Image 1 (tube, rainbow, N blue to C red):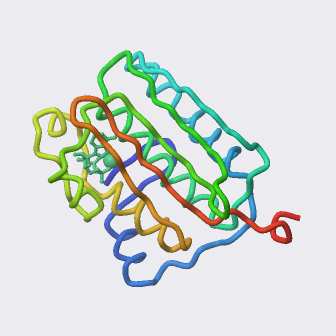
Image 2 (cartoon, rainbow, N blue to C red):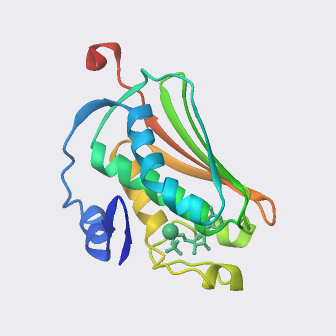
Image 3 (tube, rainbow, N blue to C red):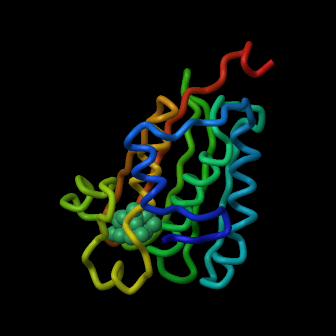
Length: 183
Ligand SMILES: Nc1ncnc2c1ncn2[C@@H]1O[C@H](COP(=O)(O)OP(=O)(O)O)[C@@H](O)[C@H]1O
Ligand SMILES: [Mg+2]
């Protein structure tokens, strides 16, 4: 079980999602405001590691239609990883912007990075990197599997670019709400 300020993720959640037995509670909400909620939750966690947030919400009015609490949960998972897999004194950058039809949320860190080999397995349930740096942090390997499942349930996706030893950038792409949905 992974627990943090946003709630708890467990195997049941992942299996429910994968079997299609999870119904989303849809509403239309501003993604920037949901991201701010995650930032507020994790401020003390970062503070403990002398890490800092840099947050850029390009459009505070950018909305998506989705299950707000699940979206908060997956952004939390990404921020939690960015902090866990980065050394003290680093910066974690969270960006929200629109690109055409997409609402993009990116979480960037200056951490240990991810090898090409690991990148292909990252989103599988229970996968954990096998470096000492990864193993020294607690975890179940379910966080990213959940990010992928929830993003896909919303018709979106998650991707990563990373350079070992330099850092990682995770991007969640969701469909921006249409003008009618946002009205
Ligand atoms: N920001 C990151 N930087 C480096 N490695 C990461 C990052 N996020 C995830 N990983 C790698 O992906 C694995 C899976 O992540 P996740 O599913 O959240 O599980 P957990 O954090 O419980 O290990 C981690 O064990 C780690 O090896
Ligand atoms: Mg994790």
